[in-house]
Length: 286
Image (cartoon, rainbow, N blue to C red; front, side, top):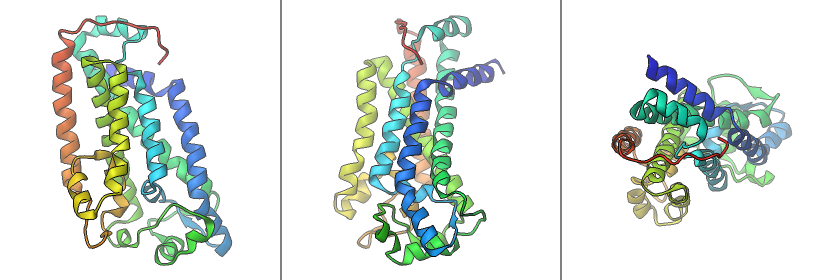
């Protein structure tokens, strides 16, 4: 119970701060730019859009890279050595302190993803089809090139409509993105403990930038690389769409299995490290 209370306290510190405010503003601006084309199409045909457009926005490379850059920026508070954490570490012990930070990373990751989802809904207001159906607008956009008339870089993948309902897809997308964000955050925490904050940021950026070669290589090779680049898995809406005959995204069970095992392994290493490390507290605002 005490651990859960500390995780909650740690989460609030990680969520209510200036970095989260910057991320929210970034997502509002970026979402308005990328989802605006769907809104314009909706107005042009006088028909409401489905609220579930976030998974398709994440399939746009530039939107996706901005999302990951924002996530990495928010996680630059690693290794959580601000003075406010010093008293927590002394009071609760190193092991519980580390678990509290990792738990806080997960909860913050969920909040980051939900904020991004909400930011893709706001530009569509008030003409939104609030139902668990994909609706005519997105189906039309998926089967025609209508969105290209509005200079949209967001592509609607028709095949996903027969695989998931909007609620199912958004639920999977939120959970998957939260796990990927947690993976990145815990990796940055790990690197900051063993090396330094610069190495942690570099590691996060490496995962984000790895999107580019994966998306620009032959689909047969892309299929192999995609097994080891979690940041590309956020393009979940493409999982049912073959590219030149190849289904290149890993299966959903593999994605979650990889992320959970990876997070658990890094957590064990972090717990071993914090027993021996000498804490160097800093004055940086979280």
